[in-house]
Amino acid sequence: MIGVLGFYEDITEQRQQTEYLRTLRLLMENAPDGIGIVDPDLQLTYTNSAFLELLGYEQLVGIAWPNLVYPDDRENLTSMVRQATTEAAAHGTLRYLRSDGSLLTVQVALPVLRDRTDKLMGFGIINHDLTEQLEAVARLQASEQQQRALLQALPDLMFLLSRDGVFLQYKADSSDELAAPPEVFLHRRFDEVLPPVLAELTRHHLKIVNQTGQPQRYEYQLEIGGELRDYEARMHPSGENVLVLVRDITEQRRAERERQTLVLQEQIIQAQHAVLRELSTPLLPIANGVVVIPLIGTIDSSRAQQVMETLLDGVNRYHATVAIIDITGVRVVDTQVAGALIRTAQAASLLGAQVVLSGINPEIAQTLVQLGIDLTGIVTKATLQDGIAYALSRQQSRIRPASTIMKMAR
Image (tube, rainbow, N blue to C red; front, side, top):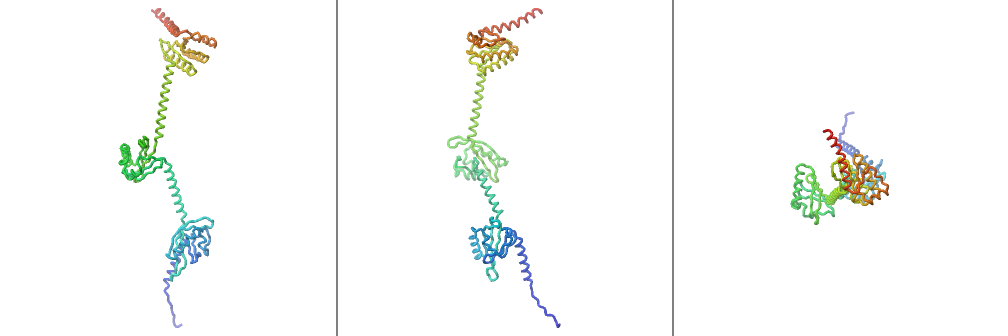
């Protein structure tokens, strides 16, 4: 050996290129998007794990890319390839057929791949799954449709005012009657278009909303189409603006007024009935311990009960010992009437009062005999005058022994 001959070559760039390719492959394998490479004939030569997972396959290399695309979207794929060939890249939306037959919508970026001599080597495929985005858009659209349907279903008029009272927007159905056409009040202040009273009411509540941020509720009347109608307004702060909801409550207020009228009429009728009851069964205290009830007209079960209640109340109130029931004005006495009189007398006797039945004419006397009515315990008199005379004499006979005792004591 006479020496060593050494050859040196700088491989820094080669090592950097190798490291760059390794890093690039690492990024592609761990990318969340499905990445693939196809040759000029659109045969897949590479797919990362995300691409396989998106479509539900274990291997895709060697498969024609168009075969994975939903048939209705293959024309769109051809247009994207043509655009990428001429413009170096293309973007679009495609639908894939997954291995289970379901559809997957993705956003596709299609960069063209060329070598240093500008020869076409193939295309890169970057697939971004749009499933969550589309679901979010669908939920948002559904929510907007629901809110729009709810707004349309509300019977309220809606007005959006600026904080200084300018009409910005409104919502009304075709059946809603507005105080003025939209072109008159939109983009104008409320006090320029509303009647003075309503404008002042609006100014008052708008000021409170601006100062406190608290919702306001108020009612007003407005003439629409020649008819005075009732409205309820609710004013709410809405960000930088104020939302006003107006509801027509004319029918509600009309029904309330009708109910109040009916209640008042019922009260009047009840008061009239009370007066008639008092007139139909008047109780008259004519002497100390003596009361009289003169009856006129027909006596039914309801009136008979009323006679008993009035008589018992009078006996108790005036401490009566004699109660005269005068039936001079009663034309017909049947079993029902007679039975009611007997029960009244028995109830009065329990309170210590003697019942005198006056006004018995020959016809009534004959009727009572034919009915076999037992009037035991009831004093009967032909006329009211006789009944009063009996009651007064009975009272005097009760007082006379007491006077005698006083004389003997002297």
